[in-house]
Picture 1: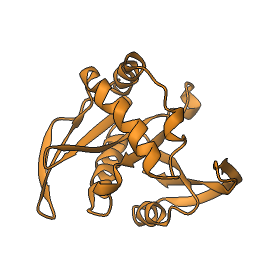
Picture 2: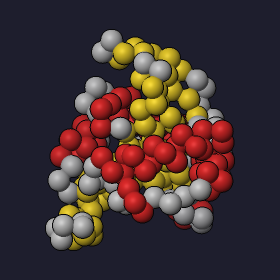
Picture 3: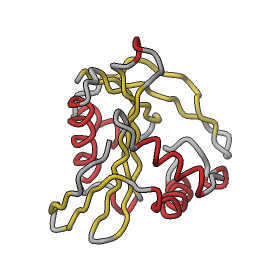
Picture 4: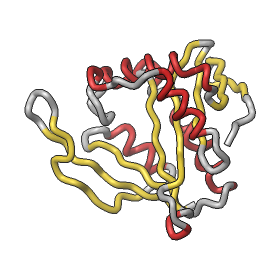
Length: 180
């Protein structure tokens, strides 16, 4: 689904939101590598991000289909991050479920941008007929968990030691769901 371009002000910052375009692929590819190195809370280490610009462009096109969405955000003209959702399966039995993801450059966390992106995505998903939004958050990411809970997500399970880090430590995956 294509999001109409939107400008708003947040804590003195100019925010610009829009759907990603295939020509954004180089920027999004670089972003993914950098943001993966900024935090332990994403699914890969920075050196594991090996997608091509063509693969990223194909992902963007997939996310612009009618039941998917990829919102990119700019703060004061600088790319800040994105959020997305897509259908959780290929069957009619799963068509009511959407899978959500979000990541921001660390310097743009804590200003309320994540909440704005999530609210926008949750509203769009509901408009599209989804009745359930699902996400996975890494244990230890208390800020994200607090945000998700404040938006109505509830924990429904954990996968212990789902993530093993290079230093030998582990973290759990926490599964959360929100009824729309």
